[in-house]
Image 1: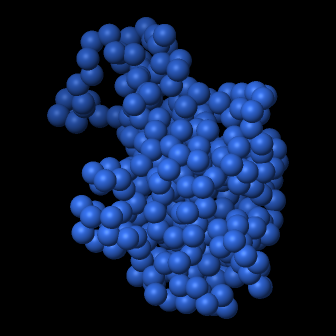
Image 2 (image 1 turned 180 degrees about the horizontal axis):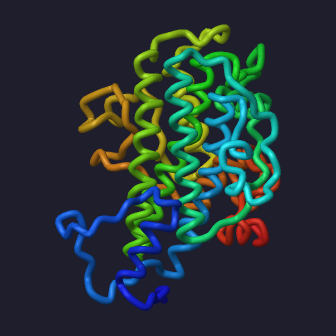
Image 3 (image 1 turned 90 degrees about the vertical axis):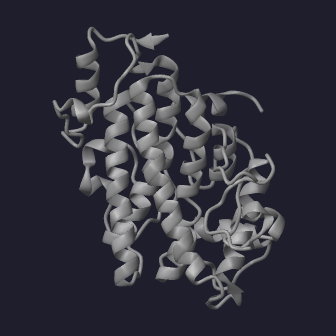
Length: 316
């Protein structure tokens, strides 16, 4: 059942003005998309899917803000924290000027995402998140199936930070693609489309950054950048347990676009469409347990929102 408003204009105003005037309405009919009569802005069923995304948006916001600035959401937009605990182990990364400018922008974009989701469908406090170098090192070692010495540290330099960044926005991208056919309200659809567009852009920037350096050795491990992306993608496919929905920046021809290329700047399926993942798949990866009922990884106490909580309270 949808959430009914008293008038079409009220629905538009709530969406456009709910996020501190980030969206600016106009009275020019040439700039307004026609909406079918009796359309419902937000269906009740939309809310859980959009709120689920807050888990990843919080992860991205603090990882990017801290990486670029040395401080995070508590300083930039404390009202969005809603009393949630501070992230574990996050810190300023040793970034060059180009990388820092990219990551700074990403972080501010995530602040906007958190604001608009919470102001449109409500939300929950920031969950406990583990963004420590140790947690990333554990993930990377699982990806390679061996101990790396010294342990991988995403905060050590720009290249390692961007390799670690490869882990995060893509999960938001495939999650939004997965939610898309299940979203019904016209306000909900507009919100999801806007979020998906920016998450896709962030993922593309990260992949292109790494693709340009694909043959570079990641010191001191004697593995190339391409090999890191391949192993991380393989791990995510293994944890999610639903086949190939994740690909490194170099692939065999049979996975390339039209089976004719080994380059893989964008990860996509046989028809060059974005892959899709369910909330369960996403949690299996982000918990790094392969089980949406068993927290760990980036979320030591599990994610929040009805969808994530139900997995935690439901037996496997």
